[in-house]
Amino acid sequence: MALFQYAALGLDGKKMRGVIDADSLEQAKERLRNREIIVTQMGLAKKEGRASLGSETIIHFTRDLSGLLRSGLPLYESLLTIEEKYRSHKFHFLFLDLCDQVKQGKDLSQALMLYPKTFNSVYIAMVASGESTGSLEKAFVQLYKVISRNEKFRRQISSAMIYPAFLSVFCLSVLIGLFLFLIPAMKELLEGRELHPITKTILAISNCLEKYLIFFMIGGASLIGGVVFVVKTKTFKDQCKKWLLYIPFFKTVFTESVMMRFSRVLAVLLSSGVPIVEALKLSRSVMNHVSFEDAIKKAEEGIVQGRKLSDELKKSGLFPSLMIRMLATAEETGNPTEMLEHVADIYEEQLERTLVQFTNLLQPVMLLILGVIVGVVLLSVLLPLTDVSTLL
Image (cartoon, rainbow, N blue to C red; front, top):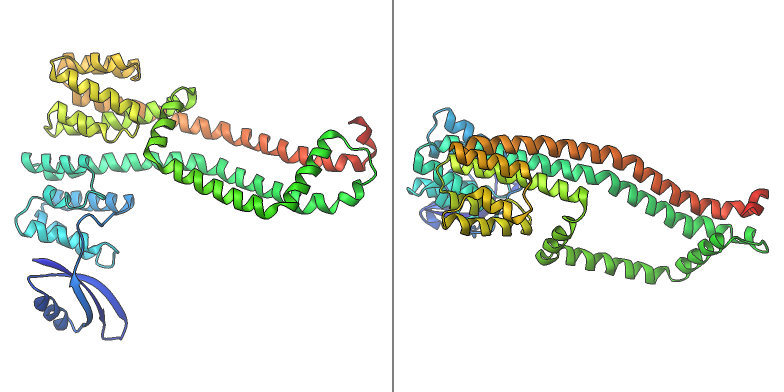
């Protein structure tokens, strides 16, 4: 079967778009006519590699599929149920195509490979492992736990950054208002007075902004655009992450988040029967930090040569002693999966505490800094108008 995209008119005259699977174009049109839908345009759906579902949709898809499989519903029927749920979704054709691929006898993991922008290598590997061991429902349960927890901490980190970003924008807006409106309106009152150097500086900045505002706007927009472009490049991101490892707080956050994701995914892959070298390769892809990824690459080479993972990770100097010791213990007892899950839980709790402490400390510090900046600008202008200005 193939997928066909169509534009049509319903019985109520409303325009609609959708996707339908059929053996041929004529059969697709016939099916739509039977549903009393008037087709205006139709063609083959260009699907491979185009779909990029949001993280929320992936989490819901994984949760729904794990629940349906655990209830005893066959895979194809489970996919059909999910496809019905997402018929009004922008990427409905993805779910319809998964049904079609499975109906043709393909493994679900093979169907997921057609959408690399949505399903990463870890996701596909865990599904393939579940298919080979006959425990696909367990694989989706584990996948849901992993991706939902990763999404939870991504949101926590984003939330921790929202407050300082809001305060910074608010402070910048206040300062621009002061320099462009309040200070120019008070220039006449300050003429003929002996001014403090700080007041002179503030007035000079205001004059400069007022005179060359258009150039500052163009320059600011260009600078922001350039920074956004550079920041999005992988090379710059990787280099920044390396530099941030030298700053204590950022080193702690990066290390805890990397250890949590790496341990959780590695534990799930090993429990699914994935070989250690392949599991390390896949787990490396979720680290999102080039320094730690390089350390795992070297560890893979050492394991192939018969050395222990804990010894190889210790050589890098990046992995915490807790991680090394617990991994060494797991290697001696022969039960790495349970120990890695325990390590992931430990770093998950530590990361939560770190983010809470950071947020609680950052709020008063940001308020103090921004208050001082705005206060200095206001006082530098207002003090010359008072009798206490001689104290300057």
